[in-house]
Length: 270
Ligand code: ATR
Image (cartoon, rainbow, N blue to C red; front, side):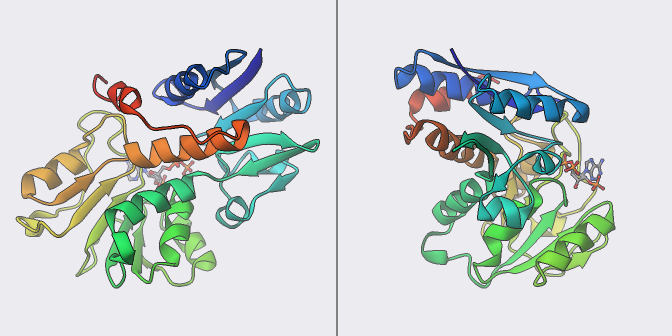
């Protein structure tokens, strides 16, 4: 059996096994299986050794290990290197390679939301400065938008600014005077009824403003529900999640899997 795995902590909520096992079946990879495992930081070295020993063939990495895994890898692809964030691992020519497929996953979602770079000139307000935020900034950086970021621990946002000079940092709890797109990259909302302490009441009826939550489970966080009720445009993290999975599957299997109706159904009953 060829074993694939997603590691994280917590990991229960991850839908990666469901998606990848579905594709493995669909593309007749009957000797492959995808599992999830809750690990601690001290386990990372051994997990990578298992990849070296071919006991694990491919791996996804999620919160909070996307950066912590890097010292154990031999080589990173350019996006993983720049964002210091790895979500996909595999062995190529005896080297353990780290890739970032979150960034292209987010990028594709934005291109679909704003065809022909219609996002150009807009102001994007990013909440959070956690593991995935650098992938979001990396993608927006080339789109000629104004980027403002705010994180509870301001220092982490300042660290991102060192690398992505264009961004502006705001204190947590403050809002920019103007913004067209608000993206939640924090984990607030993963637990039901968790609320971000920011008031967007003045966006009532603004159907041109987009509120984007990277969370996909639950499907509608309080952040998105409030925006929907105000009449704003909303999107959750489902597409980005599926696209990053698609890119990861392609890296491992050399197959571009289809996001078909069955896959969409997995999200209907959560
Ligand atoms: P990590 O920071 O280890 O990469 P993450 O889950 O990727 O973990 O990121 C969590 C993000 O959600 C961070 O931006 C975090 O803010 P801090 O940097 O201040 O920790 C944010 N976050 C989580 N819970 C929060 C809360 N209750 N209020 C505000 N921000 C919160």
